[in-house]
Image (tube, rainbow, N blue to C red; front, side, top):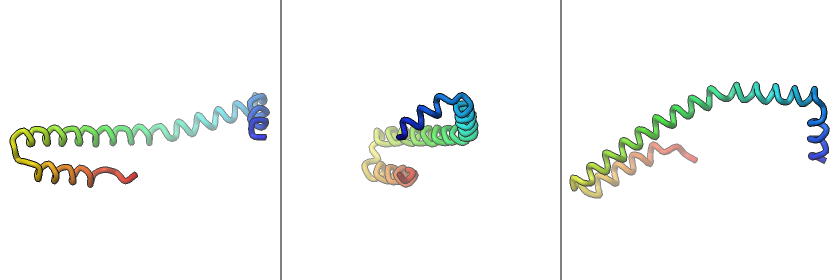
Length: 82
């Protein structure tokens, strides 16, 4: 039944034009929000990578497991809930 409906919609040029137009409009509306989200996630990733590099440097200086555990806990707190 669904496939039959899709076939009918696809064969009607006017309906197909309207569907494409509406889909394109929705995508253009969502794009700025998605681009902003991507930029924010890239910033967070850069921060986390910098923190990880700092941790590695600290570990080589022998400050030990307590420091590493504290930093990992802080990073875990920043992690978004899934």
